[in-house]
Length: 125
Image 1 (tube, rainbow, N blue to C red):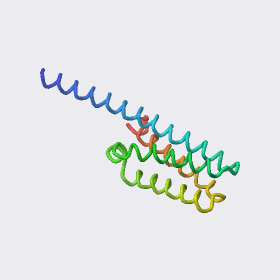
Image 2 (image 1 turned 120 degrees about the vertical axis):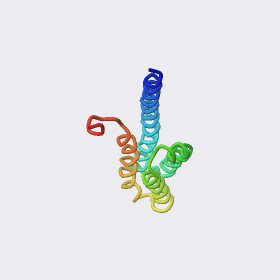
Image 3 (image 1 turned 180 degrees about the horizontal axis):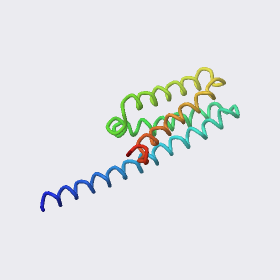
Image 4 (image 1 turned 30 degrees about the vertical axis):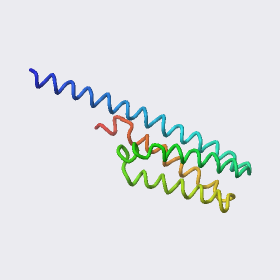
């Protein structure tokens, strides 16, 4: 009976840990996407220095959670987001008129991090 109780406790701990991780990832990616959306609006209106500042702030949010991302998210996904940030910031610094197209792809990729981790019926069955 002790083994079953320990197994049930471990199962509950895993489920709670998974739910907390998904919640954290959702709020983390949401915060980054919000910053990128505001930056994109500034870029679309021609306020490139402000867009660059906000894009760099979003990158700092991402970089600040590098340890978490390196452990809980696939490395190919974290690399793609990091490259997307570098590409966006580089475009904002050199030719900001072409940077507007990069926002949608980066935001979609950041959002997909949460979507991949979220538990759905399709991911269970």
